[in-house]
Figure (cartoon, one colour):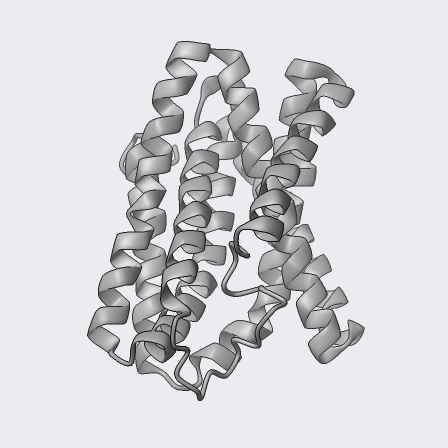
Length: 257
Protein backbone atom coordinates (compact mmCIF):
# COMPACT_ATOMS: atom_id res chain seq x y z
CA UNK A 1 0.00 0.00 0.00
CA UNK A 2 1.35 3.43 -0.94
CA UNK A 3 1.37 6.09 1.78
CA UNK A 4 0.05 9.34 0.39
CA UNK A 5 1.91 12.56 1.27
CA UNK A 6 -0.60 14.27 3.51
CA UNK A 7 -3.60 12.44 2.06
CA UNK A 8 -5.14 15.46 0.27
CA UNK A 9 -4.41 17.70 -2.73
CA UNK A 10 -3.43 20.76 -0.68
CA UNK A 11 -0.94 18.71 1.34
CA UNK A 12 0.54 17.44 -1.92
CA UNK A 13 0.82 21.03 -3.12
CA UNK A 14 2.59 21.98 0.09
CA UNK A 15 4.99 19.06 -0.34
CA UNK A 16 5.84 20.22 -3.87
CA UNK A 17 6.34 23.79 -2.63
CA UNK A 18 8.72 22.59 0.09
CA UNK A 19 10.73 20.71 -2.54
CA UNK A 20 11.07 23.94 -4.54
CA UNK A 21 12.14 25.85 -1.42
CA UNK A 22 14.76 23.21 -0.68
CA UNK A 23 16.07 23.73 -4.21
CA UNK A 24 16.08 27.50 -3.72
CA UNK A 25 18.05 27.15 -0.49
CA UNK A 26 20.54 24.89 -2.25
CA UNK A 27 20.88 27.31 -5.15
CA UNK A 28 21.60 30.17 -2.75
CA UNK A 29 24.27 28.22 -0.87
CA UNK A 30 25.99 26.07 -3.49
CA UNK A 31 27.76 27.95 -6.26
CA UNK A 32 27.85 24.82 -8.45
CA UNK A 33 24.14 24.18 -8.10
CA UNK A 34 23.05 26.16 -11.19
CA UNK A 35 25.41 24.21 -13.47
CA UNK A 36 24.31 20.94 -11.87
CA UNK A 37 20.67 21.88 -12.31
CA UNK A 38 21.22 22.86 -15.95
CA UNK A 39 22.52 19.36 -16.74
CA UNK A 40 19.34 17.85 -15.33
CA UNK A 41 16.90 20.22 -17.04
CA UNK A 42 16.57 18.06 -20.22
CA UNK A 43 15.82 15.01 -18.06
CA UNK A 44 13.22 17.02 -16.14
CA UNK A 45 11.69 18.20 -19.42
CA UNK A 46 11.48 14.63 -20.70
CA UNK A 47 9.89 13.57 -17.43
CA UNK A 48 7.19 16.24 -17.72
CA UNK A 49 6.55 15.33 -21.36
CA UNK A 50 6.28 11.65 -20.50
CA UNK A 51 3.80 12.36 -17.71
CA UNK A 52 1.57 14.05 -20.29
CA UNK A 53 1.98 11.49 -23.09
CA UNK A 54 1.75 8.34 -20.96
CA UNK A 55 -0.45 9.56 -18.12
CA UNK A 56 -2.50 12.73 -18.47
CA UNK A 57 -3.41 12.46 -22.16
CA UNK A 58 -4.61 8.80 -21.99
CA UNK A 59 -6.75 9.63 -18.95
CA UNK A 60 -8.29 12.61 -20.74
CA UNK A 61 -8.88 10.50 -23.86
CA UNK A 62 -10.59 7.82 -21.80
CA UNK A 63 -13.24 10.26 -20.59
CA UNK A 64 -13.42 12.69 -23.53
CA UNK A 65 -12.15 10.76 -26.57
CA UNK A 66 -8.75 11.33 -28.18
CA UNK A 67 -9.87 14.45 -30.00
CA UNK A 68 -11.23 15.91 -26.79
CA UNK A 69 -8.14 14.88 -24.82
CA UNK A 70 -5.78 16.48 -27.31
CA UNK A 71 -8.00 19.56 -27.36
CA UNK A 72 -7.82 19.97 -23.58
CA UNK A 73 -4.02 19.63 -23.58
CA UNK A 74 -3.64 21.97 -26.56
CA UNK A 75 -5.81 24.55 -24.79
CA UNK A 76 -3.59 24.34 -21.72
CA UNK A 77 -0.49 24.86 -23.83
CA UNK A 78 -2.16 27.82 -25.56
CA UNK A 79 -2.84 29.49 -22.22
CA UNK A 80 0.84 29.22 -21.25
CA UNK A 81 1.89 30.43 -24.70
CA UNK A 82 -0.25 33.55 -24.32
CA UNK A 83 1.19 34.23 -20.87
CA UNK A 84 4.75 33.57 -22.03
CA UNK A 85 4.36 35.59 -25.22
CA UNK A 86 2.47 38.62 -23.95
CA UNK A 87 3.14 38.77 -20.20
CA UNK A 88 6.37 37.03 -19.17
CA UNK A 89 8.03 33.60 -19.52
CA UNK A 90 6.72 31.44 -16.66
CA UNK A 91 9.70 29.10 -16.37
CA UNK A 92 12.83 30.71 -14.85
CA UNK A 93 14.82 27.50 -15.35
CA UNK A 94 14.07 27.29 -19.09
CA UNK A 95 13.41 30.82 -20.32
CA UNK A 96 15.10 31.40 -23.65
CA UNK A 97 15.30 35.16 -23.15
CA UNK A 98 18.14 35.09 -20.60
CA UNK A 99 20.99 32.76 -19.69
CA UNK A 100 20.19 31.91 -16.09
CA UNK A 101 22.90 29.27 -15.74
CA UNK A 102 25.29 31.95 -14.50
CA UNK A 103 24.05 35.36 -13.32
CA UNK A 104 27.14 37.38 -12.35
CA UNK A 105 25.43 40.74 -12.85
CA UNK A 106 22.78 42.19 -10.59
CA UNK A 107 19.47 42.04 -12.43
CA UNK A 108 17.94 45.35 -11.45
CA UNK A 109 14.21 45.51 -12.13
CA UNK A 110 14.01 41.80 -12.92
CA UNK A 111 12.52 40.59 -9.62
CA UNK A 112 8.92 41.83 -10.00
CA UNK A 113 8.11 40.27 -13.40
CA UNK A 114 9.96 37.09 -12.43
CA UNK A 115 7.97 36.75 -9.21
CA UNK A 116 4.69 37.24 -11.07
CA UNK A 117 5.61 34.65 -13.69
CA UNK A 118 6.93 32.15 -11.14
CA UNK A 119 3.73 32.57 -9.13
CA UNK A 120 1.64 31.64 -12.18
CA UNK A 121 3.89 28.65 -12.77
CA UNK A 122 3.58 27.50 -9.15
CA UNK A 123 -0.21 27.94 -9.21
CA UNK A 124 -0.47 25.74 -12.30
CA UNK A 125 1.76 23.12 -10.67
CA UNK A 126 -0.74 23.02 -7.82
CA UNK A 127 -3.65 22.72 -10.25
CA UNK A 128 -2.00 19.75 -11.95
CA UNK A 129 -1.13 18.01 -8.69
CA UNK A 130 -4.68 18.40 -7.38
CA UNK A 131 -6.37 17.34 -10.63
CA UNK A 132 -4.27 14.18 -10.80
CA UNK A 133 -5.57 12.99 -7.42
CA UNK A 134 -9.26 12.81 -8.35
CA UNK A 135 -10.82 9.36 -8.93
CA UNK A 136 -11.51 10.32 -12.56
CA UNK A 137 -7.75 10.76 -13.10
CA UNK A 138 -6.90 7.12 -12.39
CA UNK A 139 -3.48 6.46 -10.87
CA UNK A 140 -1.84 9.72 -11.92
CA UNK A 141 -1.46 11.23 -8.46
CA UNK A 142 1.82 9.73 -7.29
CA UNK A 143 3.55 9.85 -10.67
CA UNK A 144 2.60 13.50 -11.22
CA UNK A 145 3.73 14.46 -7.71
CA UNK A 146 7.15 12.85 -8.22
CA UNK A 147 7.59 14.30 -11.70
CA UNK A 148 6.49 17.80 -10.74
CA UNK A 149 8.52 17.56 -7.53
CA UNK A 150 11.72 16.81 -9.46
CA UNK A 151 11.02 19.68 -11.84
CA UNK A 152 10.34 22.03 -8.93
CA UNK A 153 13.65 21.11 -7.31
CA UNK A 154 15.47 22.41 -10.38
CA UNK A 155 13.06 25.31 -10.68
CA UNK A 156 13.74 26.30 -7.07
CA UNK A 157 17.49 26.30 -7.65
CA UNK A 158 17.14 28.57 -10.68
CA UNK A 159 14.62 30.82 -8.94
CA UNK A 160 16.84 31.26 -5.89
CA UNK A 161 19.91 32.09 -7.96
CA UNK A 162 18.10 34.61 -10.19
CA UNK A 163 16.34 36.34 -7.29
CA UNK A 164 19.63 36.59 -5.41
CA UNK A 165 21.12 38.32 -8.44
CA UNK A 166 18.09 40.60 -8.71
CA UNK A 167 17.73 41.46 -5.02
CA UNK A 168 21.31 41.20 -3.76
CA UNK A 169 20.26 39.40 -0.56
CA UNK A 170 20.02 35.67 0.14
CA UNK A 171 17.46 36.28 2.89
CA UNK A 172 15.21 38.39 0.69
CA UNK A 173 15.53 35.90 -2.18
CA UNK A 174 14.50 32.97 0.02
CA UNK A 175 11.63 34.96 1.54
CA UNK A 176 10.23 35.82 -1.88
CA UNK A 177 10.70 32.21 -3.03
CA UNK A 178 8.51 31.22 -0.08
CA UNK A 179 5.83 33.71 -1.10
CA UNK A 180 5.89 32.50 -4.71
CA UNK A 181 5.76 28.81 -3.84
CA UNK A 182 2.75 29.39 -1.58
CA UNK A 183 0.84 29.59 -4.88
CA UNK A 184 1.33 25.83 -5.30
CA UNK A 185 -0.99 24.69 -2.48
CA UNK A 186 -3.26 27.63 -3.38
CA UNK A 187 -3.61 26.26 -6.91
CA UNK A 188 -4.36 22.82 -5.47
CA UNK A 189 -7.06 24.26 -3.19
CA UNK A 190 -8.70 26.26 -5.98
CA UNK A 191 -8.71 23.29 -8.36
CA UNK A 192 -10.13 21.00 -5.70
CA UNK A 193 -13.00 23.38 -4.97
CA UNK A 194 -13.82 24.00 -8.63
CA UNK A 195 -13.75 20.29 -9.43
CA UNK A 196 -16.23 19.63 -6.63
CA UNK A 197 -18.58 22.11 -8.30
CA UNK A 198 -17.96 21.13 -11.94
CA UNK A 199 -17.36 17.38 -11.60
CA UNK A 200 -15.70 15.53 -14.49
CA UNK A 201 -15.62 18.65 -16.68
CA UNK A 202 -13.64 20.52 -14.03
CA UNK A 203 -11.15 17.68 -13.67
CA UNK A 204 -10.69 17.50 -17.45
CA UNK A 205 -10.15 21.25 -17.70
CA UNK A 206 -7.60 21.18 -14.88
CA UNK A 207 -5.75 18.16 -16.28
CA UNK A 208 -5.70 19.75 -19.74
CA UNK A 209 -4.33 23.00 -18.34
CA UNK A 210 -1.69 21.10 -16.35
CA UNK A 211 -0.76 18.82 -19.25
CA UNK A 212 -0.49 21.71 -21.68
CA UNK A 213 1.63 23.71 -19.26
CA UNK A 214 3.94 20.71 -18.73
CA UNK A 215 4.46 20.35 -22.49
CA UNK A 216 5.03 24.09 -22.88
CA UNK A 217 7.66 24.15 -20.13
CA UNK A 218 9.31 20.98 -21.42
CA UNK A 219 9.55 22.38 -24.95
CA UNK A 220 11.20 25.60 -23.78
CA UNK A 221 13.62 23.73 -21.54
CA UNK A 222 14.70 21.42 -24.37
CA UNK A 223 14.80 24.20 -26.97
CA UNK A 224 16.94 26.46 -24.79
CA UNK A 225 19.40 23.68 -23.97
CA UNK A 226 19.50 22.51 -27.61
CA UNK A 227 20.58 25.99 -28.68
CA UNK A 228 22.99 26.37 -25.80
CA UNK A 229 24.69 22.96 -25.71
CA UNK A 230 23.63 21.08 -28.83
CA UNK A 231 21.45 18.06 -29.56
CA UNK A 232 23.77 15.54 -27.92
CA UNK A 233 23.26 17.18 -24.53
CA UNK A 234 19.46 17.16 -24.86
CA UNK A 235 18.15 14.14 -26.76
CA UNK A 236 19.38 11.29 -24.55
CA UNK A 237 18.50 12.90 -21.17
CA UNK A 238 15.10 13.89 -22.57
CA UNK A 239 14.37 10.34 -23.76
CA UNK A 240 15.52 8.94 -20.42
CA UNK A 241 13.15 11.32 -18.66
CA UNK A 242 10.25 10.19 -20.84
CA UNK A 243 11.12 6.55 -20.16
CA UNK A 244 11.23 7.34 -16.45
CA UNK A 245 7.76 8.90 -16.63
CA UNK A 246 6.41 5.84 -18.43
CA UNK A 247 7.95 3.57 -15.78
CA UNK A 248 6.52 5.69 -12.96
CA UNK A 249 3.06 5.67 -14.47
CA UNK A 250 3.12 1.93 -15.16
CA UNK A 251 4.60 1.12 -11.77
CA UNK A 252 2.13 3.15 -9.74
CA UNK A 253 -0.74 1.92 -11.91
CA UNK A 254 0.23 -1.69 -11.20
CA UNK A 255 0.54 -1.02 -7.45
CA UNK A 256 -2.81 0.75 -7.28
CA UNK A 257 -4.61 -1.98 -9.20
